[in-house]
Image 1 (cartoon, rainbow, N blue to C red):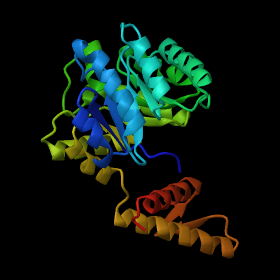
Image 2 (image 1 turned 90 degrees about the vertical axis):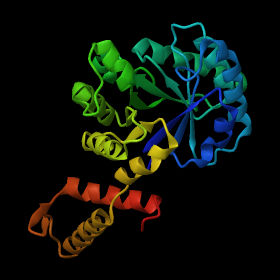
Image 3 (image 1 turned 180 degrees about the vertical axis):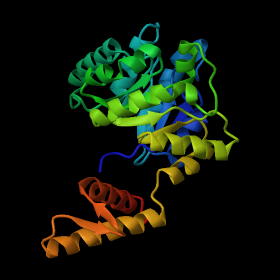
Image 4 (image 1 turned 135 degrees about the vertical axis):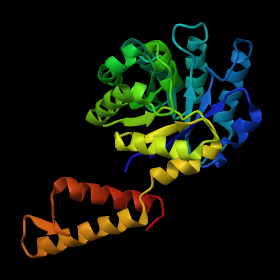
Length: 290
């Protein structure tokens, strides 16, 4: 199974203490943020802090992602140069467009060749946060072979749409569907927008469950306290694990008996059901649940 990105935790790039401890908070991925979390006067110093964190802090198996500044700012080129040379796992590109993803890809290739790194080793995630980005998300993903996922940015998106951001999220339902389907079609991860009320854990669970039901493979978070709730939604329950085991046991029995089609609990079991069961057991094994 490919890299898990159930949770992607945003961390401000200008806070040395948080950069030092980010790897022990339990998220699958951490996003060291050089954009929204950092004031204009701190952009240069934050970039150096993040570079040193990438080079010197042991983040163990946690994916290290850096959100650079938008390409139409004065900070982006320096971000790509400095962070690219430090070699994070992934770069998160804000205000994603086809052109932006292709430009970052091209610049990283130059850096990797100069530094002697594997070309294509640094991956990209597209931050889709505009009406244009939503409508063109499929082509944005196709713009670079480095892209391993799309993160939907609900706050900037609703601002661009001129609508109010609500906890129910009806205003971004179309956008969620569009992103999820495009990501599934191109076999990359889809990361849902953060839930911004860090004290409403029931709301977070409901919002995460909705995202999962729409096909999102993970959810961004803005507070470490949100991690366990998100993980609980994206982890199979004991009942789901047992059902998956029964599906696989029934499949093996049917194969021994030479049956092409079989049923379980009165319901026909076909290839999609078997694949879901197999994926459930694989995830449960990775998470140490079986």
